[in-house]
Length: 607
Image 1: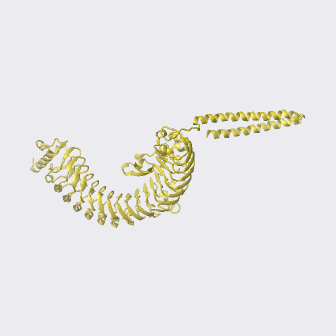
Image 2: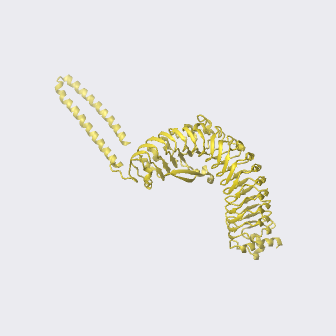
Image 3: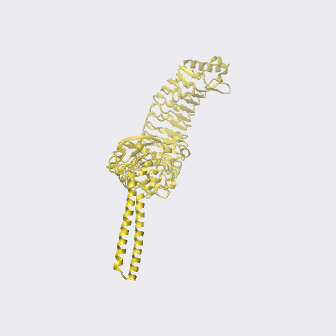
């Protein structure tokens, strides 16, 4: 055996001996050194040097302190993820001068990122994810000029992003999610012209977005969620023809949303909620034929709904045509006013419509024929093959508590119009949207009755109609809501017996029916003077029979009376004949009229 190869074997055996446990490394033995390339977790090159070490599937517990990195000058891949390694990353890791891929993710490694990492001049992929690393990002990271993917996420590194990062000219993926980074995004980031994915979310970055970001013409995904970035977004952000996803929610951006964001026509997702945007140019989304998700929740946009976003004046004819793929539209917690335009119902694939907490007035539109995205249960696999990309947060206020639900938008279909000034009746067209999972119309001025066909919404899991002026009885169709798990009908003017159904029996909280003085039945007090549905039907049948009897008795008396006195009043045969003919005609008319009245009575009774 050549001395260099024997050195590799000896280094592995020595490291194995230092481990607290090394299950899966049983073949590592100097007695078996001639078959080094057959050892588990090892791959060799054509001249039998170790080129790959992957212990991710071995149950290894220990540190890297005794690992002789200098013994592996030909190592290309070092994969240590999903192990029980602990301790620190030794500075000797910089001796792996041929290394192309390094992955130390999801271990118990602590300490700092060693500055010697900058010696790995051939490194193309670096993964340090979900570790206990702290300290700062070393400036030497800029020496990794062959790097194509940099993943330093879910660590605890602090301080700024070093300007030297702009030297990574070949970088395609930059992911620094979930750290404690501060300061501004360096202007040098615009030098990474090959960058396709930039993920800097969940940090403490501040300042303005550098104008040099417009140089990233190959950028596909921009994720800056949950930082403290501020100011205006450069208008040239959308110059890239490949931009697919923009996530800038939960920052302090202000001013007009850039009108060029969709110039490339490839955009599918915009998450811009919880900022301070004050307006959106009416042509912003005119070329967004691929747009699926729009979220401007909790901004300061002031306008009529029909005058904002892709809605100019009355919604232009291109609105639904230019956004044919739109699935998710959230404009809640702004200052939109005016009526909900009927044209908003032209988005055929829309699954989630959230216009809550605005100042909208007028009726709820009544023609939902075009909402085919809500008219049936969603086929998740065909619409969203990559489900992990479509998780959203839904805020639901329940008993004055704001709950946050993490939902897969793929499976979600819902409408939230709560917290506005909408009036008139709940349109019956809503009951045709049988794919709905949640419906929230609370906190408006809706009146009239709850639609009888509400039971058609068999997939409905959450229904909130509270704080309106709804009256009358709760329809019997409520018993058909077999999926309902969250219900709130409080603070209305509802009356009568609460319908019973298998799923409704599980909703035992009385507060969901509170402030409706006329309601009774489970889970409230039993109805003392209100007949059950069976009793009502029996009573109605008896009333019909009694009415028929009274009608026939009265008719018989009247005609008998006139027949008797007609003999004395009309003694002449000709006069008697005319009189009896008149009585027969009158009887036919009365019977015909009675039959017509009874049919109407029966029809009203069946309803």
